Image (spheres, rainbow, N blue to C red):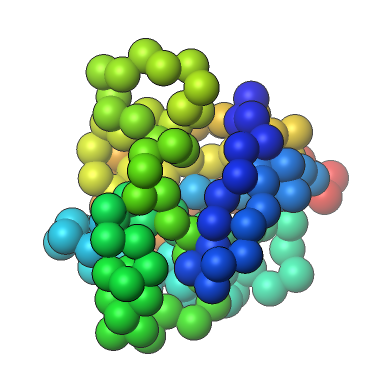
Length: 151
């Protein structure tokens, strides 16, 4: 289960993972210094734009230590407009893969790394590395989880 830890949006608003209960959430951890992230973020933006009113929420959490000052211009340069971008410069949400701190719910086993959270707030799985979230395989995977919400 993902604990209801606070997460801060790029615009400064704070929410928790509990606010996403009832939806399938695709959480992507990324950084501005990651070349694969530069490719993947626009695909995640397209995915969120196409998700529309579906029971799917895509969020991207930056691990950049520079926070908003580093992330905001980077996101603008990629023309990301539909994706909710969050900040985790202190590493409260994602930890190194060999860190066993149970208070930090997500492990980082590669960069970028994406997690699927089911509607009950459980981590259903993850994929380390760049993924094409607009591919048919990705759509089938996410539709499987979304179908369980709607069906």
